[in-house]
Image 1 (cartoon, rainbow, N blue to C red):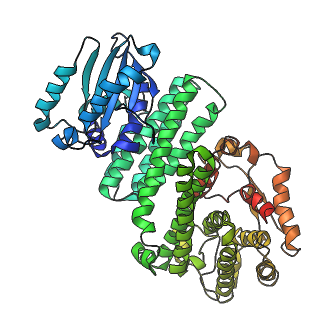
Image 2 (spheres, helix red, strand yellow; image 1 turned 180 degrees about the vertical axis):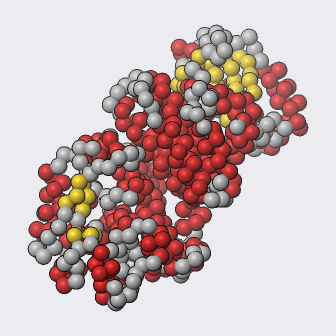
Image 3 (cartoon, rainbow, N blue to C red; image 1 turned 60 degrees about the vertical axis):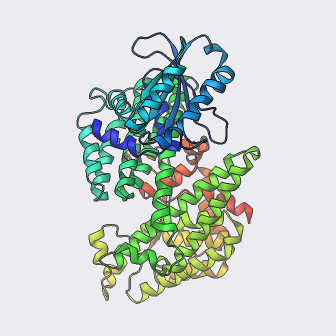
Length: 565
């Protein structure tokens, strides 16, 4: 296990990775972290600042300067900005005299050089000379290399008495099977469920659990990136984010050290999740969306079903990434207009990429399974956040509707209620009207198209859905899903059945009345507003949970679009 941890640390980058892990490690060691890594702010050489005592020693101030990988001569003094020596000089010349908090000025100071790998021999003489020259009565130096960090992580986060039985084995299996993503993810699911299954409500156990989940996700991410296969890491990132939120929600309205520790650990999980998404989409999707059939061909499926399932899956993933960018832009105040503008540009770029993905992969014009209506809804929701995309959404959904109707009439690959891969392989059965009736006995796809037709004032598309229902799908139960009083408890971890279904939607009435029927149900139910992700401003988590756990996205999230016209 220590070797696994050391290799993981060696692969981490400095910004957003190694410096995301270290604060939680120091907190678990009992130190009070008073300064965390920041972007766009002057740090004067200090990446992390903490105060406390280790191994029973007197209380000291620990100032960390972090560098990724091995420390080479170039990393020591080869770059005036990024090298270690200038950073250490800044700590001595600027941070300690001018920025050290006043309450800690009388304490001894330890400057810690933290690296993910090892100190190479050619830099050892220069480093030793620097330390000897600058050590004083109250300022000393410590070396925290990958071996030491791995040992601390193993002792603090992964001790046998803290992990459920077999958890280490699950982590090892997940890492070993990265080239088989479904098997790797299966073991990681088992690991996270065992870590998040806390029998008591003790703060210490909750903090330990969320920190363990964070560390395990970072380890999986580092190894997946090294193996150049991010699939398991992507699915696991969603899983850990949702399980982590389940713990965060318990502390969202509380103050104090426990609440802050849990918030910091969740921030680390969210950082890992965002980097996993970025890495996956950048390599596998974004650079290829502009090429005709490029992504469809890259799936290398055994049949068209494989391509269809994967393309709709990618559509949902890309759309959620854009939703997070839009959310991020809304959270930044005007004072951070540069960051806000960057987020808005990412949102616009993702929206454009989705349109290119659909244009260059026509298989996205006809879903195979009703389940794929979830991805269609998420994509349409993202595009609708920019009012200029209304016409595009109408054209796309009209084409989906036309192809679905034609496929149904000709016993082609019409959308069905099947979800099992083996059953979908055998679908359809031409000429078998009874089979066709059985596998189209319920639908969320057509109600979703009707909702968007009503929102976008597309009378023709809405009437076409109504005509399809009246003439060919009288047996089909048009329905939609809503949260209930059990949803908050089970929504993020998918631990039990929850939610309620509004069945037999009346599509034969005018579109305004149809929309009133569906959105009116939102007004009569308080359960959506009781979802912690909505209450505390993390509403994209609702979309992530719906995609990951295959639930229709609550209509409350798009209700505002109606008011926007």
